[in-house]
Image (cartoon, rainbow, N blue to C red; front, side, top):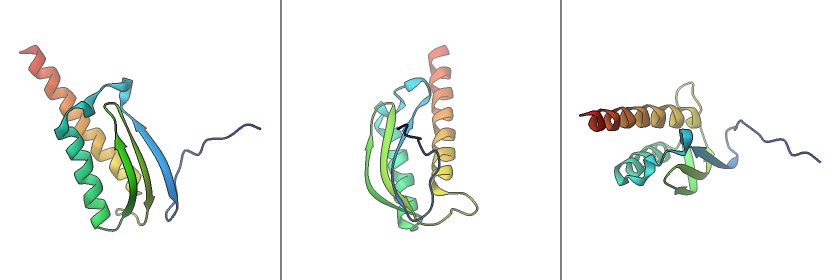
Length: 102
C-alpha cells in the first residue's frame, strides 16, 4: 500500500511538521537565529493561535509537534511562520554575503 503524504494542515489537529532550510544551509547554527524562531513561536502561542507540544531546532531544519488553533488574519499560522522565517533568513543570508564581499 502506497502512503500518500499530506501537504496541508487543518485547524484543531495535532501534527508533526518538519521544515528544511533551502539547500540544507546551516543558518540555525547561530543562537540569534534560533532565538528568532523561538520568539515567533512564543508570540503565536501566547496569542493562542497555536499550541506547541514540542520542537527541535537543528542547524538546517526544524521539527514541530503542534496544533494550529486559529488563523492569523486570513493566513494559517504555518503560512505566517514560513513567510516570517523566510524573510528573516533571506535578510540574514544577504547580510552574510555582503560581509564576505567586503
